[in-house]
Length: 72
Image (cartoon, rainbow, N blue to C red; front, side, top):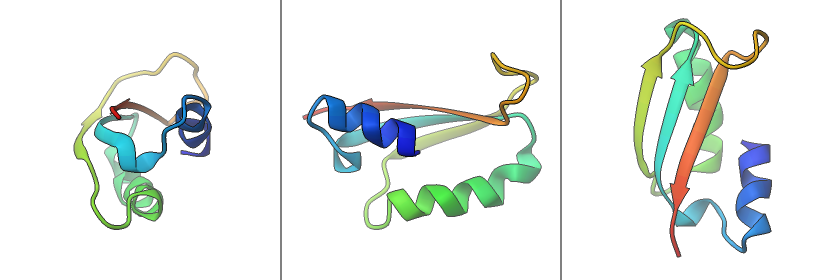
């Protein structure tokens, strides 16, 4: 989330500009932990979200991948 925050800041945006997120988890058992961290960044009005379990991510050590769509 800190990396995504930096990417948004790089184009003059912040999490209030995010309108949709997609979250990919290797293990849905990690959903509660991921959701707790996610809630720290989207406290008031979270964007639309899709969360799915996947068989693999691009790097073997990755457990979660998140992409975001933001608009001004």
